[in-house]
Image 1 (cartoon, one colour):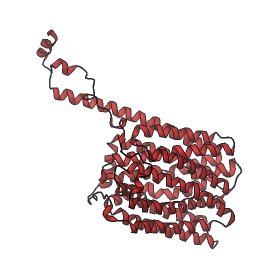
Image 2 (cartoon, one colour):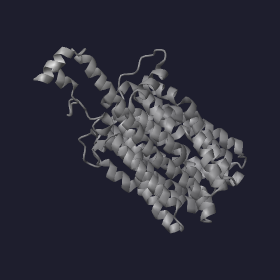
Image 3 (cartoon, rainbow, N blue to C red):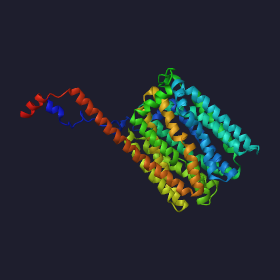
Image 4 (cartoon, rainbow, N blue to C red):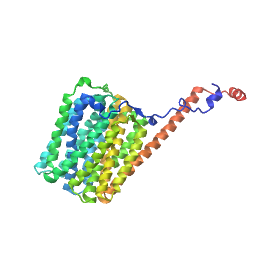
Length: 454
């Protein structure tokens, strides 16, 4: 190669490699239920199927109980914010604990703890002594449990099924969450209208027993355990620096922060939409949440067969999710809102499963707990900021404006993510060009003249 060749811009895969975020992470799975062939995951799936119905019953009962006690959509948002505040403050430390400890044992402890909390609130409501501060205290206690439970549960999935089935397992778990969303709120709405709030909290407490039993029955020798992180100083900061210097992790987490704060506040906006905008009751809210869950089930089955993951597909999924929320906000009739909720549920699966799978497949296994803890901070921990904002907008401007704010946040997150990654591409290209010039060494003008004469 002559010096003149060195100075010419090179075009080709070797000189201009494809940016990592533009490439898809491929898995070999194409069967919808492939991960259920693993016994440990079947046990986990079964326990979650029971527990998540109770979780959604508890979520609906909590929001409606707060609305019953205060008559304020703002207070609904504040209580949900109180529940997620511990995740915002302590999420990275919960992720570090998940990286250090046996995840199965950690999950057993957190699930038992959350069950006892639900039992306590259920007894208080049944005795007729419940007050708003008690519900707030329960929400904070539940949030403290989630600080450790969320990263442990997220990172335990690859230990059960391995990397190749990770996307399928996360998608099936998302289907399960949303199937419970379809069943739990509908049951809760009927029970609240006929029996009262306490039974929902009691059933939620009992449902955690199924998860604990499933965890205890697992075969520990079949788990793909990652090497625990050693105890050293500065590990939380190390995790933050690792994410910051990896655009394929940092940008999805930034997008998740915007979407989690303003778009995924359905526990705040939907009660106001059901009770005020459409003049319905608890059953209306329950069926609206169920419609979103049904849509998510159908969307989840499609996502479960996906073999390509990455930041590019995630940005498209985020944009489509925002458009679906906007359609819901503009729906003038209840029946049309129900149809829009089906699409909101279906598109939410593409967003959530895509974000979780991309982060877990991209992150180093020893950093996975801290990365997924930041995922929980972005998705749940931002609610103390976004929940009151969305609640205030719903209270003073209406639920449609609150949903519209979420739609703009989702679409804006996709636009911002693409702009940041293109900027990272340009910065990377500049650094590669500088490296090539440095490798070529200083240019001899005499040699350059000879090269041009030839």
